[in-house]
Amino acid sequence: MPTKTTIDWNYPELLWYIKLVQKYIIPIQNFKDLTDAWEQIKEMAPLNIEFTKVRCKHCNSNQISKYGHYKNIQLWWCQRCQRKFTGNDASPGMKISLEQIQFALSMYFKGVPLSSIRKQLKEEFDYYPSDSTVYRWVHRSTEKVLEATKDHHPQVSHTWIAYESSILIGTKKYWIFDLIDADTHFLLASRLSTNRKIEDVRILIESAMQKAHKIPGEIITRNISRYLKAIEQIMGLDSDKVQITQPGKGHGIKFAVYWHNILKGRSRITHSLKSLELVHLTLQGWILNYNYYSPQRSLRDKTPANVAGWKIEMRSIIG
Image (cartoon, rainbow, N blue to C red; front, side, top):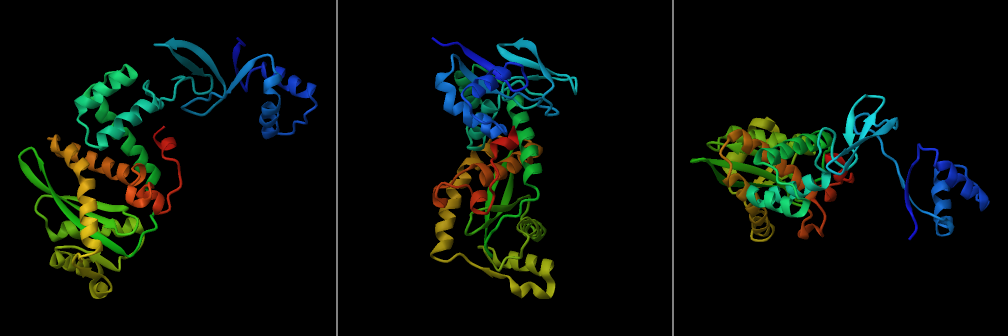
C-alpha cells in the first residue's frame, strides 16, 4: 500500500512536488497552476500526498510548529503570537471541535432536552459536557452570529405579520411578541413582555423597522387597537401610511398554522428555563438559528435569511 504523506505548503518537501511537476514539463506560474498540475500527475506519483495548510487560529500566521498531542489531537505553537492551539477545527480557546458544537446547538434550538443532548454527544463523540458547557456554547455562538449579522438588512416585503404567544418562566406568565415578514418568513424582531403594554409593541415595531431598513405598508395582527396606537406613537401624522389589518381567511390563517408549528421548538426550550436572563439569551440565539440556520420546507428548503438575500456561509462564522 502506498505511503500517505502530509505536506504543509511551508515545508521543504514542497520542492519534491515542484521537481515532479517540472519533470513532466507542466508550466507553473501561480498557485492555481500548481494545484491543476497535481490533478494531472497525481496518479503517476510514487506517493499518496495530502496537502494541508495549517495557520494560527489566533492571528492567522503560518509561522507555526508542532507542539505535541493532547488526547490524540495535534497541538501547534505560533511563533508570532506565542500561543498554543489545537489541530482540529475547534474555535480559538476551545478544545471541542466545531462539529460537536454545531451538533449540540442544532439539537438545543430544536428544543431537545439538555440531558438528551449530552447523551448524544457521548454516543457520537465520546464527550459528555455539563449543562453549563452547553449554555456557554449557546452564549458564544450567539455573540459571534450577532456580530456577523448586525449590519445585515434583509430584503423583505412591505407586509409583516404580528404574532403573540405566552410562556412560563418559573411560575410567572410572560408574552413574546414576534414580527415576521410575510414573504421571506424572516423574523424581524421579538419582544419579551410582562403585561403586553403598547410600549412593548412600539419597541417591537421600531426594532423591526431598524433591521429591515424600511417602513411596513401593512401589519397583520389580531390586536388592531394596540398596534394602531404604537404606529401613531412612532410615525405621528404619517401613521396612515401603515395599514393595520386582521388576518384574512387565506394567507393570514395559513401563516398562523405555519408559525404555530415553528414555535413548538421554542416553547420546548423556554419551558425548562427558570432564569429571565437565560430566557433572553436563548430567545436571541433562537432567532438567529431560525433566520440563518434553519431551512424551511415552505421556502423550498432555504433559510429565511437566504430568501432575504443573505449569501454568507454560516459555518465559517461560528468557527
